[in-house]
Length: 403
Image (cartoon, rainbow, N blue to C red; front, side):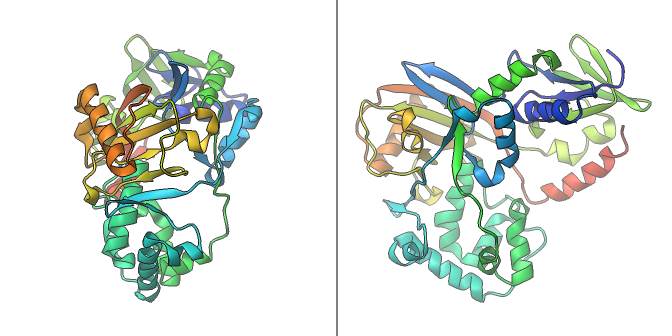
């Protein structure tokens, strides 16, 4: 196939969203999306098991960061499927007890974690700025807030949301924190000057896969399935994309693949050997969906996280039925991450055993679940170690030399 063609490689939510925006705002441009599997969506999927609706992939999206996503949801006709989560308490399992995260000034003074955080805030307000440009999350947080806040709050948050290791993850992931320290001499002072944002969470009936299915259906004429790219080479002012069965001559290519998957693509030598691709890494984790005949939770809330210092076999759990009541008595246990990546290789029986053990230890749940659904996410969460962003900058300069 030839012509002034643009190709998107990868049919996950990023590739589908890009295709939708190009079709909407550049309708005159010929665009095709190539997906290596038989369906779109990547890790996002929904299924029904024993009458329970199960969602794989992200559980919620944040209003403040999802304006473009909401625009797309409205324009594809899914606004009536939108679900807004109620504000929910969040918990940390710390010092062998489930502890509520403070949700306001009163909580700082009256909760165990609040008092620890208050001590860290006091340290941050008084400590001068002295950080390095390239620094780990752990180094930055210990310097600003102390070891206990870092261990009890920051580490489980990073593990639970990105699977990351704070000892190696770059603080540039939270560039805003660095800027606040530089501009105001304190993270807290910078935070207090920040404009309030909408902190509500949302999703769709049937989960994010509802959006995936809708986009794939509306854009079906521009999507080619079972066409995985294995080689990209320049040809004059254009590029040739090689698949197992075809070649595509294109003007522009947009790679929306996870970075670790790009290791399987043959690039021009200068790019293929670049450390940005060679050193790419991602965290693996397991989602264990459990549902019960009755509500077995000891608290109401969004869920909880557990620091690694507590030595429990899980990262935490999301209380699906509390966030969206239509999910019934469903909860999702999380295991894995950069520090427990090998867990994805364990047997189903062992993973269920570990998950139930973690719930017994943290939530005192002794009931047997009515149903179980296990999902392994191998190398699903991209990691940003110290040095990542400088390697990205160098890679982008090399990339600019190609059409």
